[in-house]
Length: 167
Figure 1 (tube, one colour):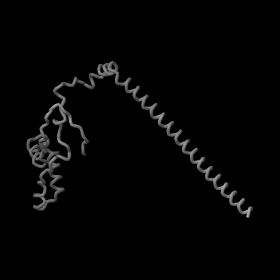
Figure 2 (figure 1 turned 60 degrees about the horizontal axis):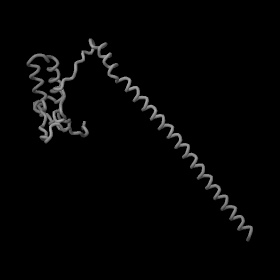
Figure 3 (figure 1 turned 45 degrees about the horizontal axis):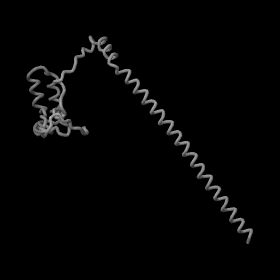
Figure 4 (figure 1 turned 90 degrees about the vertical axis):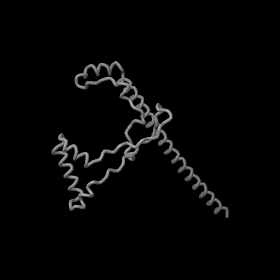
C-alpha cells in the first residue's frame, strides 16, 4: 500500500508542478504584453508631444504674418469683421429640420410622362438657360426653397448651445 500511496503523491506533485509552470508561463507572457503596450503608449505620447511642438512652430504669429505678406496677391486675405460672426441660433437649420419639398413631378407622371423624364427636362431647361429669367423661373418652380423653421427664443442671446449635428 505504501507504493500506491507514493505513486499517488508523485502524480499529485507532477500535476502541481505542471500547473505551476503553466501559470508562470502565462504570467510571463502577460508581463511581456504589458511592456509592449507601455512602449507603444510611450511612443504615442512622444509623437503627440512632437506634433504639439510642430504645431506651435507652424502657428507662430510672426511666421503667419510673413506668409500672409508673401502670398497676399494670390490669397487676397482680409481681416474678419466683427459683424461677420454669428451666434449658434443664427445658423441654418439642421438637415433633419428641412421640410420635404412638394413633388410637382407627380402631376407630370399622371399625364403620361415619367418622373425621371420630368426631372431630366427640369435639369435640361436649367442647363440651357441658367442666366435668363425663364430658366430661373423654371428652377424656382421645380425646386422649392426650404425656409428655416423658427427656433425657440433664448433667454440669453449670447449663450451658445452645443450638441451633435445630424447628417
